[in-house]
Amino acid sequence: MSNDAHFIEGLRSGEKTVLQEIYNQFFAKVKTFVLRNKGAVTDAEDVFHNALIQIYIRLKKRELEIKSSFEAYLFTTCKNLWRRELNKKRVTKQEVVELEDKETENAFALLEQEQWELYIEKFQLLSENCRKVLTLLFNGTSYEEIVETFSYSSKVVARQRVFKCKAKLTKLIQGDAKFSKIKKL
Image (cartoon, rainbow, N blue to C red; front, side, top):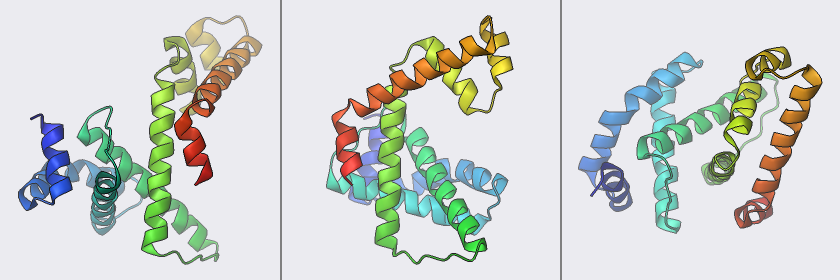
């Protein structure tokens, strides 16, 4: 049994030794991420705990398909949960407080995770050039730098390439049956 399968089965069955292994192996990375992004150790513990609960719920409801590694999946789940938490804190600071129960919060987090997984799955189907162009763009690279990197003749050409790549990605996502299911939720 692979390490990933070991973690998944241990989580599904609630084996305390496997849960401890998961914590020992992966918590430090999540803690570092949360601390670097305006959080405290208790925030990291909450995010890690909530991610494990979310994965457990998914394992109980249906088969969970992890395309990368358990570690990458868990870390992405934690990052998404922490991002949601930061967004809630930002809203709270603006004096707009919306109370949500934990079940609703978990449902939203699960939906967000499913959207992210669909995006990554379809992103991988793009050409290498499109993946590189969009990665640069999503990381805040200017069109001037994209022109330089790919030796395009102008910013107009770079914008056209970005548009075509985004359109292709959108078409791939919207053409998937999972998109229709997620959209209905």
